[in-house]
Length: 336
Image 1 (cartoon, rainbow, N blue to C red):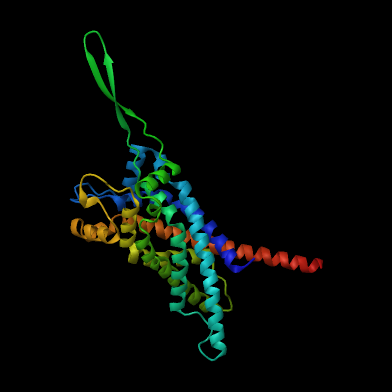
Image 2 (image 1 turned 120 degrees about the vertical axis):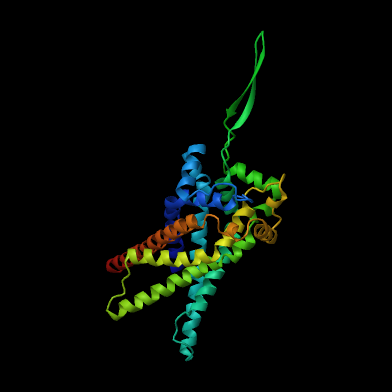
């Protein structure tokens, strides 16, 4: 089994576990990002208050709206990303080794090369999985608001009318796919792809920071005669790397969520976005810089926790897989 495949499967497994643990935070964050209170009349709710409000008004299940496609998207995204990251990195490492044989460089992969590898892997991932995240965003921002049905009760003396709440139609994955297609056709599944491609810099920064810190830690340990990195250290390195990347690229994430959420087709045109540039200009004009950082504290909590869990589990799965393959190889040699 190749290193690329091992890393791809380990990344998918780690991503799913991290997603399950942090999904309610992700749902709340997406809702915060897509709120369009132009006059800031609504009282700003904290993460926990917002979560309680969703539970009270719509039920626990809404915190997990879109979980199924999100898990599929996480597995696909992490698997695709780690697979192509390892493929591209193997090529860069081979090229660096060739250069070192010619007396150019020490054979190691530099920071710029790591950034380029991460960017290429991220771009492939975005183009392949964007439709899944459009569906997830729609399902996360769908509000379970009961409709009112007019009931007319006739009696000999009078006619009484009453409005009673009616449970809305379930908003599942296939309903969402149909809605997106009816609104914008096939191209609707690639809404927000431009800011998402620009946001490739997020995982690029994340992995560059992570690998740089990990390499320095391993080098420091090597001087002491050990090359082992614990799960807790991997967790902390992943958290720090994700924190730095998230703070830098958060405004693009808000723009992406606005574009992928269901667009307002009637009423206030200030809330209607024709594309990425139009969304950015309207947000600047009507909401100011504040609009680009809605829900940032929630996102930091969710992203840092998810990334830390992902890196920790991914590294442990890779170690376990390599150990199993090594033991299997040793056993086969003994038998032969």
